[in-house]
Amino acid sequence: MDDSPLFSSLYHKAIDAALDSRWEEAVKINRKIMKLDPQNVDALNRQAKAYMELGKSNLAKKYYSQVLKVDPYNPIALKNLKIMKAFKSNGQNLGSNCHSKLSPSLFLQEPGKTKMVNLLKVAEPQKLSQVFCGMKVEMEVKNRKITIVDSNGDYLGVLPDDINHHLLRLSKGGNKYEIFIKSIRVNSLSVIIKETFRSKKFKNQPSFLEYSNSSIRTPILTSLDRTSDDEDSEETEEEQEA
Image (cartoon, rainbow, N blue to C red; front, top):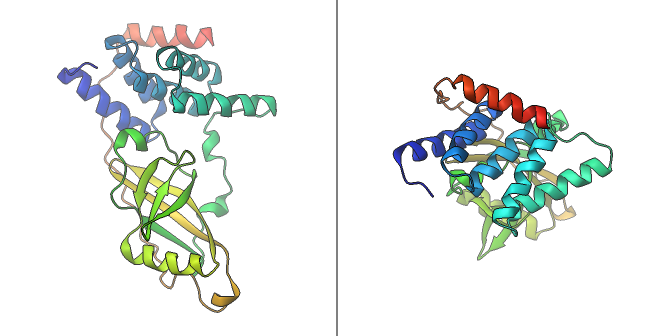
């Protein structure tokens, strides 16, 4: 991996673009990185994800396949190629913000039944750039601590102590919950916790006593220098191949 200041700057800009869902910009930045390091697995994965979000599944498949040439057992590429294959076999169009095509009710906060929570000790930005708003995540209990993980069991963050102890008690008593990613920023991840089943033991007890409408601040977006004409023409040629 290139340790030059230019590479480091591009690396952080690429992650910021992914976290802010600036997919067109992400494509251009990742292309610059791949010119410096053609076999950079992280850049290849990010490029594929960007094309998935832009609805360009052929290009996404192309880059995930390139990942597997460098790293045949890469879990990110394997999982997403499998997802793409499943969508294609079902006649569905993957992409064009496919991850955002969710029921609006998902993010409606119902007093007593849902709560937005900012996770603590979140995973590194590189990991966060692989997740998306609306993504379902899981609770994993270890040593009386609830850890939030993705579908592969990879760590994303932990709940604050007050919410942690409260949910442990309610879950142990029979309540069931679903958790979805609400917002992603660099070094910050928030989730929506939804009560899906309330046990008889807690029949008259709401899961969450406080209901907050506090908004999440929007991060300041970093700008990228204008790309050169040769990069724009390269992008056109690449998309024509798809």
